[in-house]
Image (cartoon, rainbow, N blue to C red; front, side, top):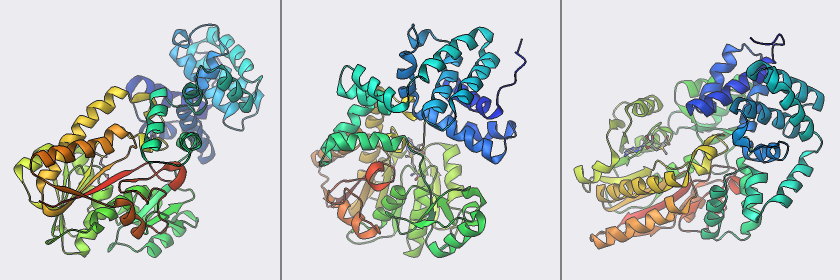
Length: 474
Ligand SMILES: C[S@@+](CC[C@H](N)C(=O)[O-])C[C@H]1O[C@@H](n2cnc3c(N)ncnc32)[C@H](O)[C@@H]1O
């Protein structure tokens, strides 16, 4: 039987979101809007529930380390719903400005409602122990109690240990000047809310027109992009209220994603420049920008995507362009090199990847991915890039792009495929992606001095996007 006290609706919605993420492998950003609607929350409570859900998911590792210090049994012996309730409570105490008495009492109510009265006594005791220290104290304790520096970072900044190691390696390989300081800054940046960035698709709407629509729809003044001249960054508000977003003349797209699409179009090639291919196009943000650029230059774009459902999203993203500019196709990109050897002038391989570069956007992703995923993805990435290398004509350009800085998915994929191509008699000349990015971006990205471009959340306020440009010379 349910206890009499109804829990607070916003907190209950957040708990339901956490349960769906845990039990159904759901994505928080997809399930939350429906849960907020069902709970009939007003704007303020919906904002609270969203911040609570995202913050709790991102900082779950930190809160688990704190909760573990407050209970006398391993966390895997704590009921999963009770643990979720405690994580939500910990975030209210340590990550939001909820007064202690309100955080404790609402969390106890939530425990009683969702896990029974027996659980509420336990939750009350743990919440009181957590509230004995402020966040700075807890972080000091976690650091002191950690067996090594990597575990300390993993616990305090809430990332799996293997991700901390992968990020450190990526910073090193990119010759960042102060790896230790940057590593902490990078992990911290992953724990912040991403900005809502819009892309004005050239030829369909100008940046000024889009800015006007943003002002009209939200009352907010957007700021211009740093990495992309087509970008506008919103300070808040719902992009779905903007007309150009609804009719696909503009899209919601991270600045680094926009920049790499611009780089694909700007990379210097030799000879014909008419046939472009986006090998892994779904859901279509880059295809829409590339299609707009292709249209302005008299070229056409084939947007290929393996999943039918995501190919339909690409159709939607490019629907504002003239119908003959973009052809959307559903196929395995690994076949293209064999089926259409040397057919294309420019190819974008925006490969499926671990997504470690967009952890701000996907709060649960860091807890779901495994090192085994990365190894399997790297194999697929090599096959897709090799297919693109076969499908580009001599003199044409291939861009290899990922939304992860993991070395196994980025520079090592490029190295392996380039070596294999050389053995097969195909020469690939690396173009200086950093320089090309610097020419396009209003503010050059931090990694612009390097041949392989890597953008960073803590330095560029964007996703961590990797881009290599290769020109086939024979
Ligand atoms: C990183 S996403 C691409 C994002 C897209 N370029 C954009 O800007 O919206 C990678 C895409 O590759 C697709 N994919 C995965 N395996 C593929 C394959 N073998 N061939 C073609 N596409 C594939 C995935 O379904 C996913 O839509």
